[in-house]
Length: 115
Length: 112
Image (cartoon, rainbow over all chains, first blue to last red; front, side, top):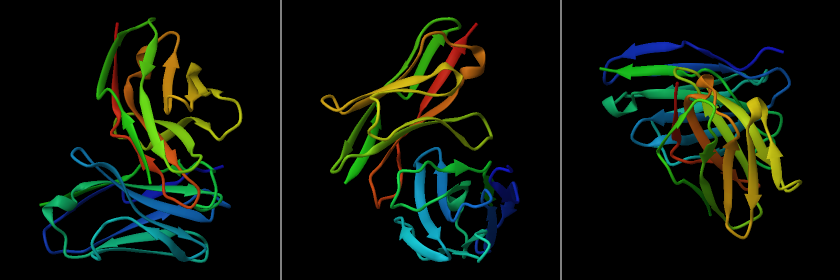
């Protein structure tokens, strides 16, 4: 079974631009969560989507948004990029959502650099 | 509320010696606990998880962890370190209905 895939793997953008990251979960998984990983803040939860609905959201500004499609693929968008948005963005999928204890499976991440 | 504290930001061991990575958690409800490993420039891989079954949990690559409710701990151990174990390790706590909360990570260095 193919794992979680994320595209692109690396991205360089300038301040003020916007960016869209894509995540394809493991086949059959309906929950997709997004995380931001930085050296200073560690791993922080952005949001979770389950069956095309946002179930939970972390403490990030409205510039960070996402969506999930009917095939469970998810996209994350960051508008008006700031230097502090430079990070590794990780996507994780799970069979069920936050109402379960099922583990999440992570993709390799998208490394975003904002200059 | 739930949180997790990894007591060591960096652990260094010699190859062939035991590994101990410490994790304490806080949760209002009975949580599930996980250990993930992250190799450089890679995503996170699940090592093991505890979900209120046996308190001693065995994972992949010879790792195991023991859930101690009285001490609110979930330390990760391995009897004999291998060079390939060098990576960042994350302890994670999850309560039902909540997102996963990650510890700050422990960087494991294995010396030859």
